Length: 312
Image 1 (cartoon, one colour):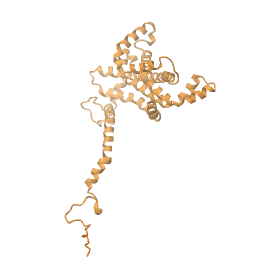
Image 2 (cartoon, rainbow, N blue to C red; image 1 turned 90 degrees about the vertical axis):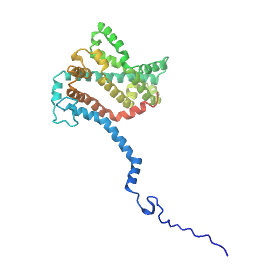
Image 3 (spheres, rainbow, N blue to C red; image 1 turned 45 degrees about the vertical axis):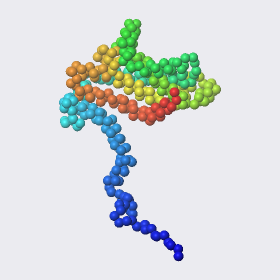
Image 4 (cartoon, one colour; image 1 turned 180 degrees about the vertical axis):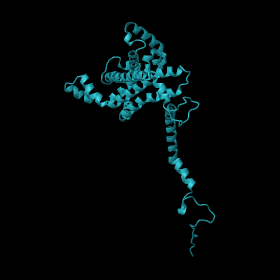
């Protein structure tokens, strides 16, 4: 007589705890929320924190610009009442003269930087000559030195130039633009060269076979294809010229030659920093050209930054 093994029961033992979700039982609500937080929710928290840190200063400046008290201690996120008295006080100064000077300096600097850096980047990308690598490294090393280390040398240089050419010497917008154009050649040339290296050399060779010169290749073929990196350099140069204060405060001493950075600083310094309301109004207006230029060039910016960093 054969013995059969005892049958094993698949029924759970009474009183044994069962895992959540078994036998069609949904997990409790807090377990679902914890799982959502671990998988997705923490990303929303990071985005919310980033937006807060990015937008809060801008919102605070807008609030201060329309706050009639003009005091940081009495500053509220939503001013009560909303007033334009800060703008009236600001416009009583030479604000529009400072604004025009900043636009002239930033506009000429951005266009000139793009043109000069594009020429230099084309030479480094398409030609081979003695000292090419050494000069490229020199441009990169010069960018590692802080700008304020050269302030004394720049000041003495502009005084010497002003003795022979007063139009581009100390306290002139032309001299300030010349300083910015010289300082923009380093990093921007490297950035443009990296982008130019991604453009196939076969296009140059085909154009030269058809009789095109270097100038024709550069202006009719390379520049249209390099529109993204040109937009990036334009925006960066414009922002640097608008936001710089150290060089401008040293080289500009006449009220009619002041830029926005120097003019607004002197404006609040006259009253021991008590004019924060008009200063916020000026900062708000000063940021408008940068925002408009960014919106105009935004379709080129991402591809220009990425492709310009691919090859060096």
